[in-house]
Length: 153
Length: 207
Ligand code: SF4
Image (tube, rainbow over all chains, first blue to last red):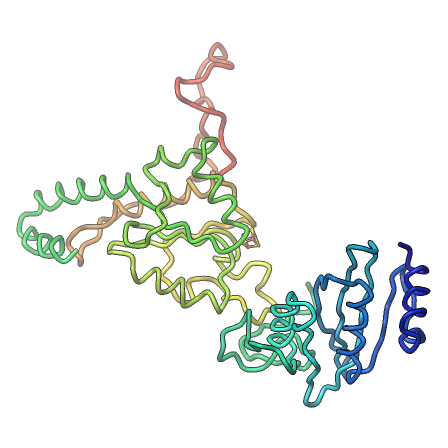
């Protein structure tokens, strides 16, 4: 299936998601509000997206952006699901009940960005030791052991 | 080791005997340095390659044992993260004396490419372990590792079972003026060209 067909398919079935869908770099991107994420995700799963490849976060300064990569094995097409998360008290609905593969990826995002996932069954750090202070992939993370790279390299 | 320590103390008054026992102990230890393969990152591939047929580590008496209680030397091959650090330390503490540490690869020596701007990498295992031999390279060739273990064997020869004693030994690396393997000494005729001494191989790039 082509991305254009996917757009038609999506608009036919879920008209309210249609204006949020865009095409960038040959890939479909759906940007939703944080409150609507779980609903939109379960719609997409019902549409045929049975695989969550990965999810990650981007630090945009003022806010975080969650990115989910979805794939459909029946339609042979992939797309991105994106959603902005506020920086203060960053929390968002967990998608582990829709795709169990979200479990460890969300733990990773929690570990490195500090975004909390409501409804996650086991939200603990996955890479770093339990007592690690802070979340290192945040742009404002500071660590006294870290050595900044000098400019001349 | 406590028994050997006591033996060392009681042999102190008999220097000739002490020297002979030391020679025996160091010979047997130096030629069977069993290794703990502490492969934590990509350098472990070279560590694995070193003990397989092409490089054949076993002929030096060094072969990997996955149990810290059986080994003499811990080869730390790869990046040690702050999360891995307590585990490495704990495995080191389980090794029986005398024990040695080889830091293999730039990551284990100094943090390597993760030296700057890294929040999670230990900058060199000598932050928390006493390292005996450092091997640079990213990753080092298996020959370098074998060379490092041969250097460790020289280090073993300086040891005595008397804990306060050390034998003076020149531990220097080969000098640029030294004759290389396969190179003819000045004055050797052209007639020997192309012929190699039996058992001699092409020179490795372990330098
Ligand atoms: S020194 Fe290079 S090859 Fe070895 S662990 Fe570090 S990055 Fe990997």
